[in-house]
Image 1: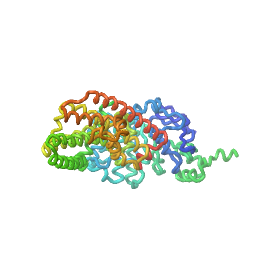
Image 2: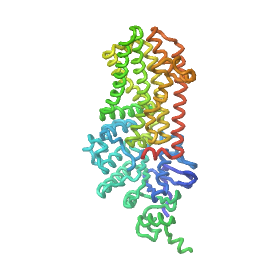
Image 3: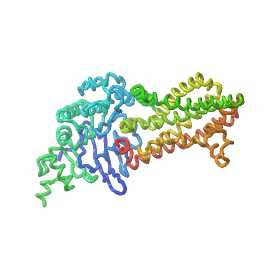
Image 4: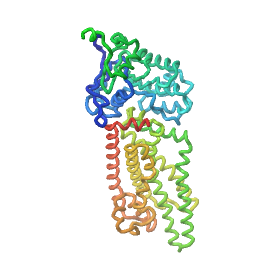
Length: 259
Length: 265
């Protein structure tokens, strides 16, 4: 078991429950995300990841439970929290009919970025997409679009970043570049990141700690290394499949020997 | 309320209009078609009636222009929201530090800009094409304009709320809602010529007072001030109701978890 994390908690869910027509999509879900930590949220389709992410973004209200970021209640201080956070998802897009720089300028102004043009250029350089500035957003490839979304997500130097499957539909080369940039920025700026992905390579490379969800409940939690050590499987992917199929916590040798 | 945020959202809509000139055409095309049709009907009636009535009949053009102010104000709010839905940008906006009042205010400003463009074009065409000067309404034009714009904004918020509640299936409401009101707000005919049972209903809506007032001004050069008072008071009530409905439905979609589905569909 790893030692307790003493870093500042920037995001915390306590007993978060969300019901849809009597079915619990999230069931007393609790976790803490620390400053400078990348926490992976994993689970099969329907496990509750998206519901959790939506609750954390204030898009869906929880049925019960508490959500705090930077020590403030999300319900009461939503705008203040969102100013210090950002979000990127493979499933949302910036308006396709605007040029890339126009979209980024609008969001830079929304987030109150002091020198928007400089910031946009700096981030586009970092993600190696400076040449896309004057392109129409809707005509970008999936890889280009993901990187533009990441520029948007980094615009306000967020302390908390939520990334929903950022490498979905990317080729291995671009996915690798995206992972490296996310990790680089995260380390340099000491950002806390909540990361969902179905790509276990992402999780192994990017996440410090992971939470596996099944039917809205946490079934196991730990660093990728710890989970592998505790499991009879050889990879995170096998753990994922086992949980998705059996809904059971991974085989823990300690428990097995006790029984 | 953060004015920089409102400015950023308005900038996004301005970028959109400059990037897609067809939207500008849409702002001008339909109103001009309407004006030409009504203008020609007016010219025809003028040619076949006594000169005094012929002069009075020009109110058709005034009514058409004022109606368009209300309609464009409503469209400014509803279409701006739909632009975010169509471009799958709604989620980005809702997870950004944008207060609901800032978002709605930006759509109001876009509504105002749309009205200005349309009103200028229609005024010029009606003046040069049909010798109708909308400025014959003199200073009355300002309260007429403001009251119709406010009612248009209320309808815009109601349309947006309904689209939020029922999703893109309810999209046609963005265009239809003002026309639910057109028959009862006495745009092209006086209230006392409407069926008796419908007259009390007509007086429940602010535009009725404005269109009645417009006819009075065109006929006598003055109007009953109480009309403006009633229109303004009713507008406050409608704005409050529309704002409440919008917030209530937005909160409901959050509670039911429909916002994300709607924003990513």
